Length: 330
Image (cartoon, rainbow, N blue to C red):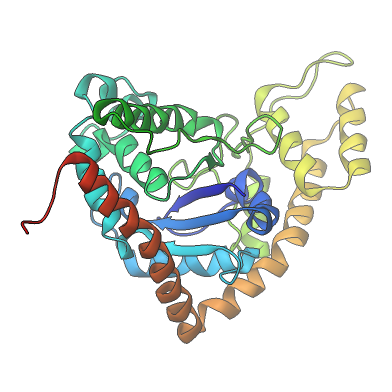
């Protein structure tokens, strides 16, 4: 049985990209593996150092995880900041992470460009914290999206470096858990890139039908194909990708045929896409509302998850401290 670790930042609200890129597969994965799913509230501070409602965001994401079908009786679901051992391993791993390699990561370069007034140390060492999240449970599998592949490779590097420096075979080098397929990337509504909260191009699982319809109708398209069987532009290809995960196959075929024959009406396509998204998300949204209002249940899940996660993490820290050379005086 593999040990699998995955986290989602606590900036509030899971979107379709989160669901189809990861959570959908978690539902099967949690039955077949030893899974740790965590809410990454430390990671959130790298881009949102003064969140308006940190606790509220954590509560929302926890409720959404559970509403999607993550089972706290089967998997370990916890809040990152409830496991202080992660912070200690993060500190220890930072001692063996080099500034040059961290500055070369694609995510750091992108964040420097996007938030030039908030280039903080946590942003630079983000891959180290991510590595600590993974290897503290000695995970050998991590479900990651395309944008996180480099961070996973760095986690492998840090695990390998620790083993080499101390002459041990302690940390496994985790591999991507991609279910035998290419890593999934769900596009946003802005015509390019991935779906995300920060990008403002996402459809969230908690969105109302009215919000979904409004967002989809504003999605970027083009002026239409100029000749039969023309390859769709990137924005239109993105809409077809979204449709492929929420609509019936015959619906997708209908609109692809219309595009191939230069008969496509993007307004009709968007209306259909919006209704299919509403049909898919509405049961989840109702469950989110139900769970979010049950504070006693959420507190129980968080406390039990922290206890299970700390049992694993504290064992790792004890062993890592011994390997490094920290020992109590007799």
